[in-house]
Length: 333
Image (cartoon, rainbow, N blue to C red; front, side, top):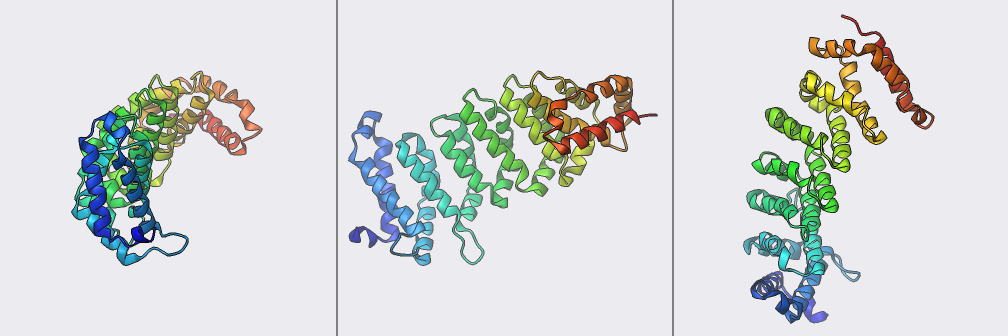
């Protein structure tokens, strides 16, 4: 152990790189019986100790910075991500831990790892495309969400055409992958609101046509999560222009009215929170007002019986429902 502590960052990175080079060339059967995998595991443990410190010593900032620079000069971040599919399960977890710890390291207000990834946007693409492979999808998702905490990296993805791949990934058949992809999608749209608002506004038609497909998905989880996120976006002041446009379109109102009658109470409840935005709008466009007036009496009766069992446990819902009924009752030209 004393010997390994003396390894310089350059030696450590070189040995990781060399081990990965060997593993890349091995067949699956060779990898399963390879001593190189054990060697790589040791080097990963040493890298984590260098970044995190150990019970006997605090992490050395100079050594950490030297290690980061070695990782960057050897393009080892992108290489480890490219090679995730050929690494063993535990090695993949180590890669996630190491890159996550790297992203936590700041020096004089700078984050070298975030800067490196911003300068090499293909790394973000590699992480996103990880959702295409169920074996590494959750590893890539964990790193990707860590990256998205940095505004510059969120911007890379938001302004990339790859952003639209999320609408496919959140619908994949693998439940764990789809749920993870949606968690990342939500972070992308909510962590840095000013930037996401700009992207949603500039690409409104394309984004919300795709979003409509999520709301009408055959997958219950996709529909529920998409509906809940839509409600959060529309009720956020940052997205005022988007909200105004969305609640001005009759097709969106009709969709929410249909979802209010969904067989799932959870879907109904999330649809309620979007529907109330249409009704509460003091400047309803004529087509929206016409739909509401044409259905006024039916809406009042429907809302009076809407999820009454929930009112006893949810005072806020009870108040919002009473307010909504009053608003519908007062509708007029």
